[in-house]
Length: 444
Ligand code: NDP
Ligand code: 2IT
Image 1: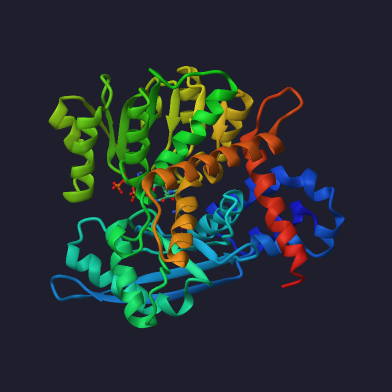
Image 2: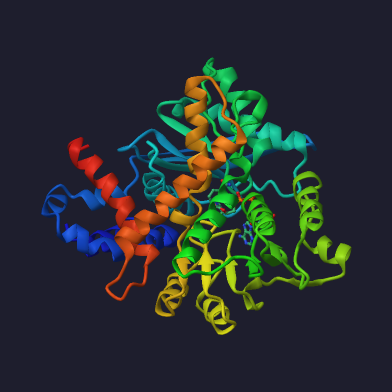
């Protein structure tokens, strides 16, 4: 089947899954050339096999809230592709979770994990459970109920989940505890665990730090120094917090952060002390970003995203499709010359087109945010060896993985005029490894 026919077929067979179509379309639009160079791919219907997940589990999760009422949510795990290693990818808890969103994430994860150089296949899971406003006890009961179904599908050599939106260290710990009780083994089937029970140093920091390391590599290609550059960041969760932390230590000026209710604009820049305030506000009190504006007397814009604010660099770190065509044009009009994605698929196809047309430095999430899953892979290695590495050791490995991903993007994405199309580079590099692994292992 031709690559273009695959997408039409997927749309017909799986209607009402726009995010899934979007992610597939972005990849298929960039790998055509290498695909055509390998007629054996078409003969074995490789693309279609790579786009459709190996399997999808869906289940009801039943739990009791603090009022004693019985609640139900849907739970899912998508095992997308394990050609190069066990299924690996996060768990998302958010009211918006559905199969379209999880299928796009599992599909992207497969290419991202391929890029990391580590032996990991792609997967993703989650629930339409919203952690917002839930007590600690409710979170624990929900996580336990979720794992009562999930545990039979995962394992250290089959499928290793981790965190994503709404799932951080607290949720991973509750899920891992329940998993161990049921599976009766202690081999680290989740990553992002606490340091006392098998977690890796630098895992909480890894996605944000990794994104900044990738950005530094991109800036180096144009001889640009990060120091003093104005950066807009969206989100205020795990990825955003550690992106900002690394940017501060490098002397950049971060002027925005956000949550699903709005964004704050701090013209003086978020410094270490203010970031500590945000970390406490978000991770301990589970408060709203609006409170930062009250605390420091700065602007808060409800119901909006920060892309209209003037910046040199934008680092979207909240969610998918948070930068549309208009946002992209506003960024470019204000002089933004680099966009490095902490979130998965934060830019719409129209926004990507604008960035590529303007030939700015633009790194898609599957390359720029791969640091998180990379350190998850390093956590798996440490667990298998039953030892733990120092923060310096993990950080060095993370830096070298991000540099390697950057190198692969340059290798496969450099255009005749010298412009590096990181979208194409990441997709082709990620695709070729999975494709070769699938071809070698036969028709499955
Ligand atoms: P968190 O749950 O820690 O934080 C998410 C942040 O984004 C919060 O500030 C949240 O606001 C905001 N947000 C979530 N959904 C929406 C929405 N629909 N509209 C506007 N804002 C929203 O998640 P992470 O920081 O872990 O994840 C952020 C992004 O990074 C996601 O795209 C995720 O897939 C991606 N990612 C995460 C990795 C990880 O290791 N954690 C690795 C690689 C990518 P609020 O609190 O109001 O909901
Ligand atoms: O999107 C992602 O790469 C993650 N949420 C992290 C996955 C992982 O297994 O660490």
